[in-house]
Length: 82
Image (cartoon, rainbow, N blue to C red; front, side):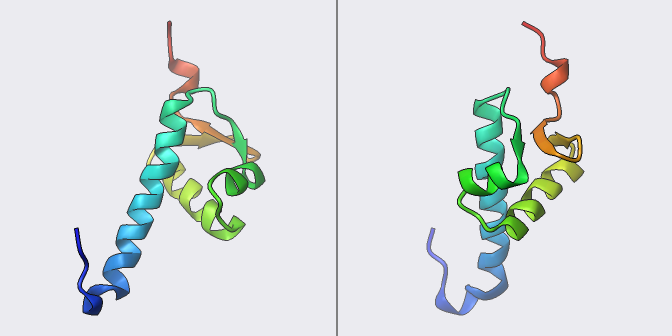
């Protein structure tokens, strides 16, 4: 997919954020027991803390991740059965 130069403004920002959400969710999906603090997540995903907090909060708001106020994990982590 190619973006035209004129459309790089808000269109790419939206695409970048959606892509980032999917990248973070993919890591949590592949590792169901993943439990990260904000600092750990920022390092793992190579993001500044502010942007990482925004992504993680959005995933919590959508019910994909859960937080205890300290760390982030999959929202369904406690409900999984073998």
